[in-house]
Image (tube, rainbow, N blue to C red; front, side, top):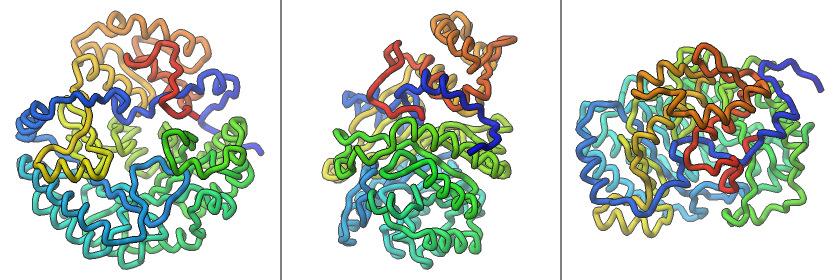
Length: 463
């Protein structure tokens, strides 16, 4: 098949630079988080930082699912028993109170995201109580100007639940689709007919959700270039505002549920590359903009507009239009980023509950970033969001001589320049069309924690 494409694809270069590497939802990445984090120091520092005036971003983790999707690498509790949610919600309310009391009421919540598991495991009363609890302790916007999103499992989300979410102030939804092919759906234990998703999308548009995102995964059992092309065409018909197309990383030694998948049924690496190449072409032909790092958006979507205006940012929810927020995350395994601190709550549910009951910050591990971390974080974020960087501007901003500070990194960028992935001219680094797909490998050059040979097994492959 042939498609015109704005994102250049060079098979030889993709093979050469398709390392395993971080997704850079933070820098330093979660691999660097330490259990030696001083919780008392963290607690008193956050108290001081809470007095600031930066806007806030809230993340809530609802870990429950009624069904086990075999590919899943999320922190989840699979159960059909709804009463399991009550003890967890009691602790989540407590964490909301503990954190909410710290923050100045003038600090607006510009962004909020509920993830999981699936938040749609909760019933209407629980959703209503949870949002009311947040309103009591945080300054939520009530004018629909916030970026308030929720992840939705189409199998769990009734029409009433969708209406309630909109009524309570959510204006964005993210739908886990993964693939519409029935054979693939059966193999991964996530059967959801296209009609179910279509009805949900139509209803969401009817009740004026501002933005609909859909997640797809390539690399699942029985997928071929032809079957996935069909799924992508069906997605284009549904016309979501944003799309995430993720590479499935098969790590059965880390994620127990993945052991239920037969590795022999997974598509070969060259098929995965063909799927991704076709997908980019199909989506760009349909008018979507390649934002970077598996993400696409319509040119009219705030994500694309923000990128054009140089305002795009990246955090644990992926690309975002809100760059100056402190991220307060609540719930099991959730990750906060407040001032120089990045820290993760206990991923184990029992330990999370014990910590909240003891009146402690329920954090297990994290890192206090230093000046070098903050400089590198800014460089990586700039490249991953905008594909260009003004070295003079960064020198001035960070009070460094960029070329001197990053002398080793500039040397290591030379192969990328020789291969036509980027150019450096007039003290500007510009990632070229063929380098955009491989932006993670370019960013890895600036990662002080990675081994210099760039290959690390802790992460998924770039493509």
